[in-house]
Length: 179
Image 1 (cartoon, rainbow, N blue to C red):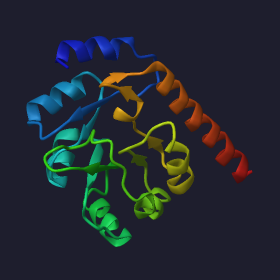
Image 2: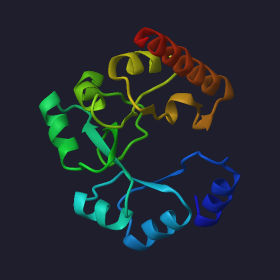
Image 3: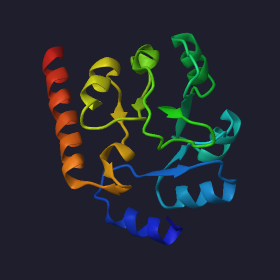
């Protein structure tokens, strides 16, 4: 997506909705352009905590990846999160050089404790069939989906509706359970 495309998208978003600019290893100038659009930057590459803090000037999302085929502990996830104390955290899976969009989930219990203290977004391998389980397990601030609502690389309306329905039903159920 070009910056001109991003401007058009941002202009079409209703008030009080946060728009996130997803970036992988950007330079400071690109981050400045994303901020100028009014977007919250999401750093999805190998950005350091110092870089993210310096260029974001406030709120940002940091994607933290669990490498497919590697075993992690909750303590390792805590260590990953601790490096970015001022970030909202998106946890995703990673396969080789791909920084997400692999359609692979991770072990959700790894981030349950973090989600009780911080804004956590669960991503990676979510679809209509498993998003309810992810929400019930982690109770995240948000969920993120991409390939889980696609057929042949194209967003599928029925899958998107099913995903949103599963999120809403689970959210209603967890909200009622709290009262």
